[in-house]
Image (tube, rainbow, N blue to C red):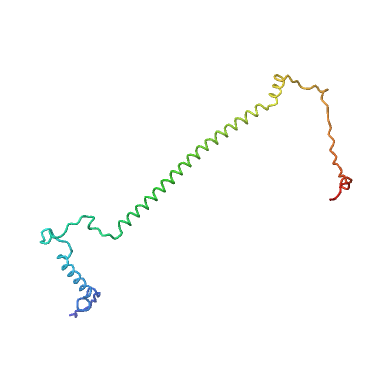
Length: 174
Protein backbone atom coordinates (compact mmCIF):
# COMPACT_ATOMS: atom_id res chain seq x y z
CA UNK A 1 0.00 0.00 0.00
CA UNK A 2 1.20 3.52 -0.79
CA UNK A 3 1.90 5.87 2.01
CA UNK A 4 -0.27 8.97 2.15
CA UNK A 5 1.54 12.18 1.34
CA UNK A 6 1.05 15.32 3.33
CA UNK A 7 1.29 18.79 1.94
CA UNK A 8 1.74 22.01 3.87
CA UNK A 9 -0.40 24.97 2.94
CA UNK A 10 0.80 28.39 4.01
CA UNK A 11 -1.97 30.95 4.45
CA UNK A 12 -1.43 34.68 3.96
CA UNK A 13 -0.71 36.62 7.14
CA UNK A 14 -4.20 38.11 7.31
CA UNK A 15 -5.75 34.59 7.28
CA UNK A 16 -3.44 32.96 9.79
CA UNK A 17 -4.78 32.12 13.20
CA UNK A 18 -2.65 32.52 16.16
CA UNK A 19 -1.04 35.23 18.24
CA UNK A 20 1.17 36.71 15.48
CA UNK A 21 -1.12 36.50 12.45
CA UNK A 22 -4.37 37.74 13.94
CA UNK A 23 -3.53 41.44 13.96
CA UNK A 24 -6.11 42.48 11.34
CA UNK A 25 -8.88 40.44 12.94
CA UNK A 26 -8.08 41.88 16.36
CA UNK A 27 -8.18 45.41 14.99
CA UNK A 28 -11.62 44.73 13.44
CA UNK A 29 -12.95 43.30 16.73
CA UNK A 30 -11.75 46.36 18.66
CA UNK A 31 -13.41 48.69 16.17
CA UNK A 32 -16.72 46.82 16.39
CA UNK A 33 -16.58 46.82 20.18
CA UNK A 34 -16.06 50.58 20.20
CA UNK A 35 -19.10 51.08 17.91
CA UNK A 36 -21.23 48.82 20.16
CA UNK A 37 -20.29 50.84 23.19
CA UNK A 38 -21.03 54.20 21.54
CA UNK A 39 -24.32 53.47 19.76
CA UNK A 40 -25.60 50.26 21.27
CA UNK A 41 -25.65 48.53 17.89
CA UNK A 42 -22.69 47.52 15.73
CA UNK A 43 -24.02 49.37 12.70
CA UNK A 44 -24.84 52.55 14.60
CA UNK A 45 -28.58 52.66 13.83
CA UNK A 46 -31.24 52.37 16.50
CA UNK A 47 -34.75 50.95 16.48
CA UNK A 48 -37.95 52.81 17.19
CA UNK A 49 -38.76 50.57 20.16
CA UNK A 50 -35.42 51.20 21.86
CA UNK A 51 -35.92 52.87 25.27
CA UNK A 52 -33.71 55.84 24.43
CA UNK A 53 -35.45 56.48 21.05
CA UNK A 54 -37.60 59.31 22.46
CA UNK A 55 -34.64 60.99 24.08
CA UNK A 56 -32.83 61.39 20.75
CA UNK A 57 -33.45 64.71 19.08
CA UNK A 58 -35.09 64.71 15.69
CA UNK A 59 -32.98 66.87 13.44
CA UNK A 60 -34.21 68.25 10.19
CA UNK A 61 -32.26 67.76 7.01
CA UNK A 62 -30.66 71.18 7.27
CA UNK A 63 -29.73 70.70 10.96
CA UNK A 64 -27.99 67.37 10.21
CA UNK A 65 -25.76 68.85 7.51
CA UNK A 66 -22.21 69.62 8.40
CA UNK A 67 -20.75 72.92 7.32
CA UNK A 68 -17.81 71.45 5.44
CA UNK A 69 -17.84 73.70 2.35
CA UNK A 70 -19.78 71.35 0.08
CA UNK A 71 -22.72 73.76 -0.48
CA UNK A 72 -20.31 76.57 -1.36
CA UNK A 73 -18.44 74.30 -3.75
CA UNK A 74 -21.68 73.19 -5.42
CA UNK A 75 -22.88 76.79 -5.69
CA UNK A 76 -19.55 77.84 -7.20
CA UNK A 77 -19.60 75.02 -9.73
CA UNK A 78 -23.19 75.82 -10.63
CA UNK A 79 -22.37 79.53 -11.03
CA UNK A 80 -19.36 78.76 -13.25
CA UNK A 81 -21.38 76.39 -15.42
CA UNK A 82 -24.17 78.96 -15.72
CA UNK A 83 -21.66 81.64 -16.72
CA UNK A 84 -20.07 79.38 -19.32
CA UNK A 85 -23.52 78.51 -20.69
CA UNK A 86 -24.52 82.17 -20.94
CA UNK A 87 -21.25 83.08 -22.66
CA UNK A 88 -21.76 80.25 -25.14
CA UNK A 89 -25.33 81.37 -25.89
CA UNK A 90 -24.17 84.96 -26.35
CA UNK A 91 -21.42 83.92 -28.76
CA UNK A 92 -23.90 81.81 -30.76
CA UNK A 93 -26.21 84.84 -31.00
CA UNK A 94 -23.33 86.98 -32.27
CA UNK A 95 -22.44 84.29 -34.82
CA UNK A 96 -26.03 84.22 -36.07
CA UNK A 97 -26.12 88.04 -36.32
CA UNK A 98 -22.91 88.06 -38.37
CA UNK A 99 -24.26 85.27 -40.59
CA UNK A 100 -27.45 87.29 -41.24
CA UNK A 101 -25.38 90.36 -42.09
CA UNK A 102 -23.21 88.32 -44.48
CA UNK A 103 -26.35 86.99 -46.17
CA UNK A 104 -27.73 90.53 -46.61
CA UNK A 105 -24.43 91.83 -47.98
CA UNK A 106 -24.17 88.88 -50.38
CA UNK A 107 -27.66 89.74 -51.66
CA UNK A 108 -26.64 93.40 -52.11
CA UNK A 109 -23.51 92.34 -53.98
CA UNK A 110 -25.53 90.10 -56.29
CA UNK A 111 -28.00 92.92 -57.03
CA UNK A 112 -25.15 95.36 -57.78
CA UNK A 113 -23.41 92.87 -60.08
CA UNK A 114 -26.69 92.31 -61.91
CA UNK A 115 -27.20 96.08 -62.32
CA UNK A 116 -23.61 96.51 -63.57
CA UNK A 117 -24.16 93.81 -66.19
CA UNK A 118 -27.35 95.50 -67.40
CA UNK A 119 -25.63 98.91 -67.60
CA UNK A 120 -22.72 97.44 -69.58
CA UNK A 121 -25.19 95.87 -72.00
CA UNK A 122 -27.03 99.17 -72.38
CA UNK A 123 -23.75 101.04 -72.94
CA UNK A 124 -22.71 98.59 -75.65
CA UNK A 125 -26.11 99.05 -77.35
CA UNK A 126 -25.87 102.86 -77.22
CA UNK A 127 -22.30 102.93 -78.61
CA UNK A 128 -23.00 100.88 -81.75
CA UNK A 129 -21.70 102.77 -84.83
CA UNK A 130 -24.97 102.29 -86.76
CA UNK A 131 -27.00 103.76 -83.91
CA UNK A 132 -24.60 106.71 -83.47
CA UNK A 133 -24.89 107.42 -87.23
CA UNK A 134 -28.70 107.25 -87.13
CA UNK A 135 -28.88 109.55 -84.08
CA UNK A 136 -26.49 112.07 -85.69
CA UNK A 137 -28.57 112.20 -88.86
CA UNK A 138 -32.04 112.25 -87.27
CA UNK A 139 -31.55 114.35 -84.14
CA UNK A 140 -28.67 116.61 -85.01
CA UNK A 141 -29.09 116.84 -88.79
CA UNK A 142 -25.49 115.81 -89.43
CA UNK A 143 -24.40 114.29 -92.72
CA UNK A 144 -21.24 112.48 -93.70
CA UNK A 145 -18.53 114.81 -95.04
CA UNK A 146 -17.89 114.64 -98.81
CA UNK A 147 -14.37 113.50 -99.76
CA UNK A 148 -13.36 116.93 -101.12
CA UNK A 149 -13.87 118.53 -97.71
CA UNK A 150 -11.51 116.13 -95.99
CA UNK A 151 -8.04 117.56 -95.46
CA UNK A 152 -5.01 115.65 -94.38
CA UNK A 153 -2.89 117.16 -91.62
CA UNK A 154 0.63 115.93 -90.97
CA UNK A 155 2.24 116.53 -87.63
CA UNK A 156 5.99 117.09 -87.45
CA UNK A 157 7.87 115.80 -84.44
CA UNK A 158 8.32 118.55 -81.90
CA UNK A 159 11.87 119.84 -81.49
CA UNK A 160 13.28 119.99 -78.02
CA UNK A 161 14.25 123.51 -76.91
CA UNK A 162 17.95 124.00 -76.42
CA UNK A 163 19.06 125.11 -72.95
CA UNK A 164 20.09 128.69 -72.86
CA UNK A 165 23.47 129.17 -71.25
CA UNK A 166 23.26 132.96 -71.60
CA UNK A 167 20.33 133.29 -69.21
CA UNK A 168 22.15 131.51 -66.38
CA UNK A 169 25.29 133.64 -66.76
CA UNK A 170 23.30 136.91 -66.63
CA UNK A 171 21.89 136.13 -63.20
CA UNK A 172 23.97 137.48 -60.33
CA UNK A 173 25.04 135.06 -57.63
CA UNK A 174 23.98 136.14 -54.18
